Amino acid sequence: MPVLAICPHCYKTINVERTAKLACPDCGEEFGFAELQKNKLLVDPRVEARELSSAKNHFVNADFAGAYGHFKKALDANLNSYTAQYFVALCDIYLHETNKSFDVMNGIVSMTRNALTVMSRSNAPVADKLTFIKAMLSDVKIIVTRRLASRDKLFDSDIEAYRKVSIADLEKLLELFKIDRELIMSFAPEVTAALVELVECAVKTCYKAVQTVEKDGELFSPNDEIYKKLLSLCNDYCFFGHSLDSKFDGNNFSPDFKPNYAFNEKVLARMDKFDEANKPYEKKRLIGFISEYENMLADCETALRFTYLNCYRSMCSRQNKQHAKLFFDGLKLVYRLLFPRVVMNDKKLVEVRFGKFVDIVDWCDILTRFLVDSYEIDNSIADRLHDFYEKLYEIIDMYVVPDIERIEKAHKKLQNARDAELEIYRKVLFDAACCCAPALKKYVDFSVGKDKTRAKIVKVCKMASEDFLMLSEFKIGEIEQSNFYRPILQISTALLDEEQE
Image (cartoon, rainbow, N blue to C red):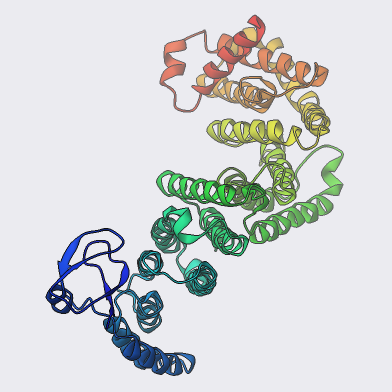
């Protein structure tokens, strides 16, 4: 009477007689009945059925330890039982997934690959195999989403750790999508849909991990190495998503920008509140509460960095509406930071101040990127830049130009002035040139048509820089050695380049 056995060569389930010499009807290889007994390759259907029945009773009652034991006995009774093979691994994951030393993602991939490999040896109908795969992927999705969702607390408490464990998990899960398409039957719409859902879950995790977060005024952004890894993983998952479903589009995803919006709104509201309180000084373009203004600018700078990093380190499409809102917030913030501060100093004299020149250059770079990318979304950006230059020129014309004219008239006198007095005027000219710098193409290389106001600011910048060099007797070497005044040479070079265009 024939019995069920597993070929020791091709591992297919076959019928064999109890004779000394046998041959596999599938692969043709020869072997002996004793070899089957020795390697536990004989199948006992009755034991398998009994143990599977007992195991399922334990499993539905969430007794995974009890279920594991019975599934293991069923597998011992039939090494080609893909059902037992799968549930042994699944119970193992359920029993140990909360154990930090247990590798859940590797477990999921191994569980799926091994179950599919064993299933490929089975003579079960295609419909049964397909039902099994759908059920298996449903379990996989539950485990993966639960594991990734369990990291929310870690995201809030230690974003760097969250990024590292997310990368480790996503790198391992990626192997699931490298399983042979025929083996996992991805041609079936239900299987395709399940796999795409897993891709979406992975892509969302990439988007979450890559975003910059703010905590107590400090920004936490991924470094270049982490960013590149997350970007690469996101691209890989999007590739698999599109290969499974041509309608899949990674650009439809977006990070959670709500914390960034809330931070920006708080800073922008503070700016509006300050402007309202400063109205008595507005006519003369003065800032009446400089200490409050400087504190506000510190928050403004944090908001700008926050916004800039999320715009260019978030993998979000430029056309995404949430992304577009960040661009326009960023423009408001950078305009405020580039605007000079006109204050009344201790000697009751009006003084035009600006931030460190290195900051101005940095902000100009950010402004240029925002302008170029925002122009694709809203072509009124050029008008907004023109408005900025109009307001900037009002201050320059009101305070900077008169100072330059006064210094030019007193030039001969200044040549014989004491060093301390000469230094005051050099500082005035240097500040004037720096205030005008955002109008130079080297620093803000964006224009739609010729902007006459921009040209007027450039002209004032040229006057200030030339007068500074004249007062300094064109001692370029000394200026180069000065940590404070060295940027005037960069401005002069930028002016020369602009004239030659």
